[in-house]
Image 1: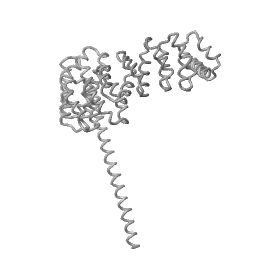
Image 2 (image 1 turned 90 degrees about the vertical axis):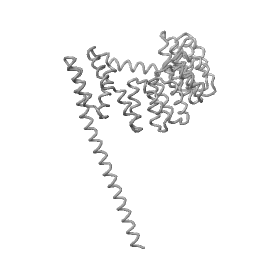
Image 3 (image 1 turned 90 degrees about the horizontal axis):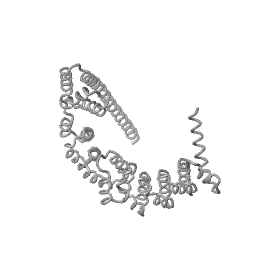
Image 4 (image 1 turned 120 degrees about the vertical axis):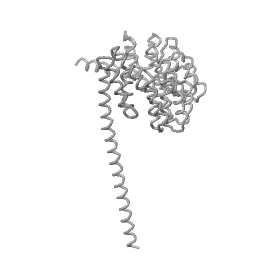
Length: 365
């Protein structure tokens, strides 16, 4: 039994050693392959860069056509080469305003022969899920509206990564129908969905007000609040009525999101509502209301912000103090706080003034 135990230990040690060696060898192989890929792509990138230089610098149209033909032949039937060339073409097209008319025409001719959309579609139809996900983004970059059905298939797939890339591409193309569908799908995974939804709304090129109203009509409070937060900075005035209604919500997240959105819009007609929001029990609502009143900058708004410097929440006091100093050109309200009986309000204003003085001193050095 003693011998068998020793043999067992030796076998276990040898097995673990063999596994570690196998893992090391596999990692070494992967590293070598990655290095080879980087070197190969670097070589391709250099050659394609030279081709673009030759195309844009060609002295005659004939020479230009020959260089375009050379590039198209070089990338033909090679996805890696084609993708590098297509990305360079897209980059140049996006800054075409800085190029001469001759160079813009050269890019148009190159696009006609390279056919980036058609070629990406061909690779998409024959690719795996990873490749399809990447191509989704490229098709959106090229504003390929005739690829919408392909992209919708990605959102309908069971692969989460493919769904994500398909949805982002459709967002760039402004597909409202599938944006609503994808947002509804996101409700099942809240931890995953918040970042994705904000990114999705940031990329969306369609009518955000229309999209938001459809979400508000069909989705949960969580989704409503998330969408409002995602579009709040856009200051969409058409949704003012929705935000006003949301301020009365019993859901704190919806109320916070709506007050933030109204504070971005900062219409003088909203002044009374924002002043009321300063009395809300949620300090985030109160601080958001201060920011909106700071933009309105009316006498009533100034008085309300002065009052907010005495808020029970430290963070609200600091925001209100900063807003007050920036709003109060005459410094009358600032002086009133400094000479008042509320020590905490005065400290908040003093702290803001010290920061301004210190920043001014640093700038002057």
